[in-house]
Image: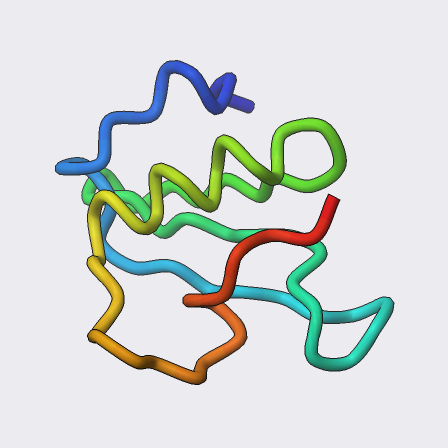
Length: 73
């Protein structure tokens, strides 16, 4: 898997936010890349992955989506 620090936002085609442990709280992020690969990040990499996702897909002002909320550490 590619380290999260090596992911370039412009190479991301899509993002899937997963809340498998606590409903309503993102616990992992899956990137779908332009080259057809996918990368899933969680744990210590989650904050960096969320920051990259927000660089690529900027949240709408006043969004209430869980993916647009600040991460809970």
